[in-house]
Length: 272
Ligand SMILES: Nc1ncnc2c1ncn2[C@@H]1O[C@H](COP(=O)(O)OP(=O)(O)O)[C@@H](O)[C@H]1O
Ligand SMILES: [Mg+2]
Image (cartoon, rainbow, N blue to C red; front, side, top):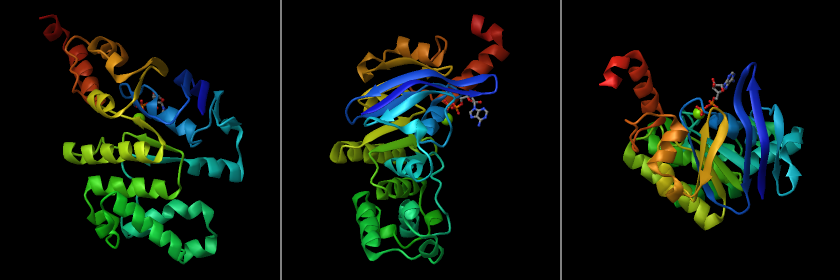
């Protein structure tokens, strides 16, 4: 279905993603973990063609996605809708219009300018919001909603494009634990009920374990682990994160960074 072959991205002398190879042969839910700077976002951005690849190929259902241009490239971007940590909604615009923006690349400039949406699209947007449990917020401004609700609006906007793949770049990193759970459950349901593939960069290990069928670990741009959640032992996790013995399973990528920085700044403490 989706095949990523030796995908590489260089920014000058820095290799952000280094010959990453990944095969997805049936719809599944994949969690990508690794400390910050490991190349997780760059990998997703290349998949969605937000970032050009330096080397390697992406093929989806036999098509070379890396070569697509213009209209075909935009069609691909709708097929693999992306959601972000910061939701990327229009804050002052009402929820339903934000969701309808998921259809923008299928509409004319004029109808976009006047915010004219076909009635059928409006009904579909409300159905999707209803499915995500937030239909009653449809007329409110996006900024009036909680973070967890806003992320569900962003998921609704992605679903408006009827994507085969949903790419989520740290979708719960800005949310409290309760909202994080609601958003991860929504993504899981979308995978199970619709058969869409979800690929999510996750900043905690236990989230990847709990919700994903498959976990991919990245370190320094390379894929260093690709397996089932139960194969992800603490030892393996420590290798992925390059963390020391004080590594905690519940730690986030950011916490691990702080931890490492602190131990380098104060080596005496670590020796004790
Ligand atoms: N637009 C960019 N220009 C230059 N370097 C970048 C850019 N985007 C990412 N990088 C670098 O690529 C590496 C991987 O970054 P990123 O993909 O954001 O990692 P992650 O999402 O795992 O934190 C980092 O070293 C980062 O500084
Ligand atoms: Mg990132």
